[in-house]
Length: 122
Image 1 (cartoon, rainbow, N blue to C red):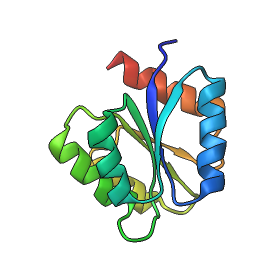
Image 2: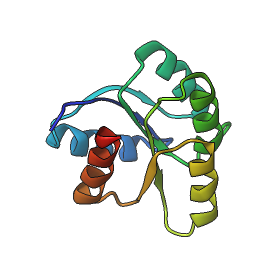
Image 3: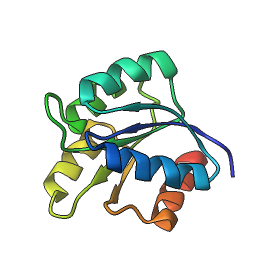
């Protein structure tokens, strides 16, 4: 598997740490993290990661708006939404905004691997 530079975006430090651990075990590098949509946009511009895992629900600016703004400036950005059950409508909005897929919390390593491999093929 290709080792990707990843940015993890979530307003929960615990969720960030869990995702970092998972991605590191998968062989990827977590180059940047962000705790809000606005911070994600700024950090994306600085780091230009291969992949972003983006929480949907965050204060100030949610993951959908952050995704929309990143994709507006960087159409090839690879963003996978990370969502809780019951947010299906928000997932549809995120895909419409440009996200390339989504995984449910708690994140299953095999499911995340499938989504990442699918991105790499396209």
